[in-house]
Length: 328
Image (cartoon, rainbow, N blue to C red; front, side, top):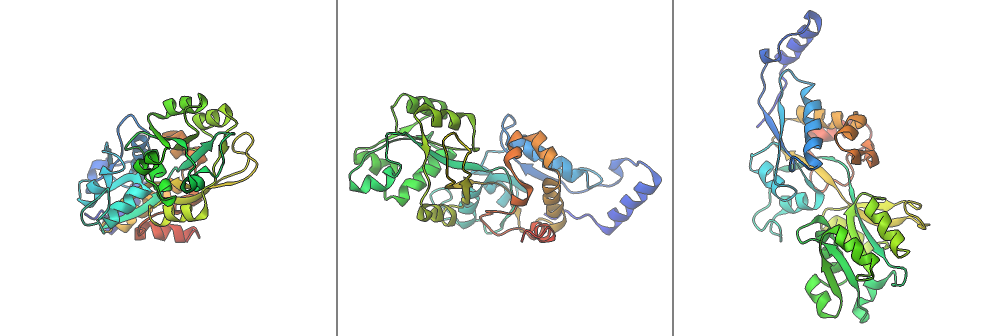
């Protein structure tokens, strides 16, 4: 489906600016739906704000927001035409694009395109003071570890599984060699870390969040830097984005910590009109304050990062704006 602001519409808009207000119903457009997350989460207000800003550029309302099924389901909805824009995480968008993998077993959706990189969540591992910071690299030599990995199906569960793979283990084989893999809600895992029931607390969340501060303080925790080969695998194979937690983010953290970000990505298809994609990206990048109104997590997001770490081919409408800003 293509959404085009025709020359007639442009001329009409110019006439409106001279002649005064005219009902929006005098000019109509096809409708593009923006599929987000549940109405009580952070994705829905984010998508709604983007839709509102895009609609301000048109007579009528070409973009509407609808709740969706989340990071795994939204790429399917967009690729199949059930929606024209969507939100997902970088790794799942990449897996949907490629197909033939553990998440999307069938043929990939090569018509998907990336539009914008929004608020990141950072993969973070906190290691207790009395545990070797390089414990994961010593598993092959007989060391054991007790690690909390989040709930099955969560983004953190997915991330920690991929990290362990680079050390030669999956969850089952790690437990078989004597280590403990503890699943559960993050709050419970944080308590387990404080109570010395696990040695490593992990989360994929914004930096300096309350639960991460609590974990670091509980047992003089230290952030584990991810080795370059692990980061490369997460970026190149799984669609994460390289990142660094700056020194001083947490108490006692004297050095930068190399890690990766789980990008929140707006997606569309190759068929979507360049102009509406361009306007969407422009609105997001040039209205940072309004994006913060939609979701406070945008306070840790920089507009110039909107193009960074996009895991699949970028839509031409977005590329046009990125080049105008000198970001590509």
